[in-house]
Image 1 (cartoon, rainbow over the protein chains, first blue to last red):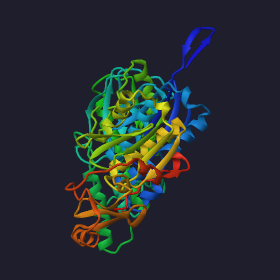
Image 2 (cartoon, chains in turn cyan, red):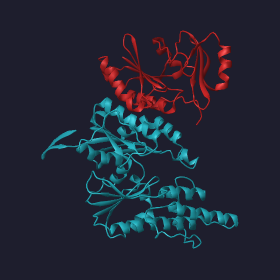
Image 3 (tube, rainbow over the protein chains, first blue to last red):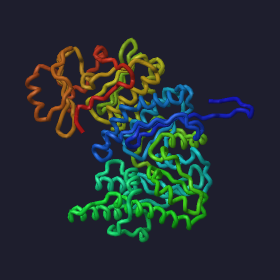
Image 4 (cartoon, each protein chain N blue to C red):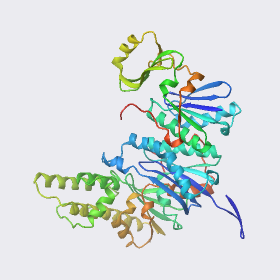
Length: 337
Length: 185
């Protein structure tokens, strides 16, 4: 909406964003990619805890049941009406196709019926821009994306260029957290539970692992070491101290991240390191990255996991470039950067 | 104007009712999502109608393709929410038949199963359910005078009638529109 002020016309851009790429139905309203008017997340953790992970069809059904409720709550919380919106943004991928589709269709209907632009957002770019809410970016920068589906280093030279320079050769770090949590019978999602448990544990020398020989990210080897240890202990009928297993796993998991980031930082003069994705909420990781010789940005804990605020933040930069999409927009579970 | 939508079947169905009803079917090659809004826009434009002319939305809630059902439900809910119009739901099996006749509806539910509904005029003999494909013959024999609809696309695909709109049940608010999947995951 256009406001007349002393300094002339100042355009405030109000964007409603929807994010349904996995198991959370999220809707947010953000002004100019910075000012959060409302952020509503309807979590399905209780539903998926029963199965130890996300069942895609159940996730899609929940999204479809919740979507209008979540949009309505967001508008009420922001205390604005549909007509105050300047654009609608939505995550188009990557993610679970059935889940993405619900968000994409809802966004299309909103944009269509309100006659305002529609903006499609890449989920990972959203995670990177969770950092934009409270900071400004200095390029070139290095974005570390760590989540249940991703373990990547991305180089950015401006707001619109994303170059993947390292990724995982097998499992994502968050996936390894979930699997270790399952082996220890701790529940889902594994990240926060293991992080909390690790605080009361010590190093187990029986779990042997070496991060330094890896040329890229890899978590299947570490995961196997942990599973082997737990199975061996069970066979020997010896007591498994879960805190210690959690501590040892977390030490190795985070050590690997720091090792690869350090290596990459010596290759080029980056101005900032951005922590992005669900695992950016990990206390050990947040502590260790601050020891690195570079300015580090990290999102508020609540904006680390999937949320629509980050989608609205990047949508603002796309709005400025008028990068709008048509109503034939499709959800793409394997969307490339 | 009333808007009628069913996306649970292979062809995307959009109906509009002003003084009379018009039916539109679209072959989307399995991509209902990419065509849905585009086709609604096209149908409204070609009939000189606007979104805000919509007074009531009628939505087929399944059974049928899980993804298809969800698309229709999501679109109808959000549209009813933004337009603040009335919203009605009906079984997608009932929607495809003629409520004035005696009909047996059998629709492919994949994995050697079928969705079944049997109704005679306004009386429902068998409410939407799922059966194994081996059972189809016994139902066809028992109800041999009934007209067969879409027995895996060998019979009538549809016989949409205006009277069917009376059989929709009104949904209190857009929040309350729920899918009818029947088949377990």
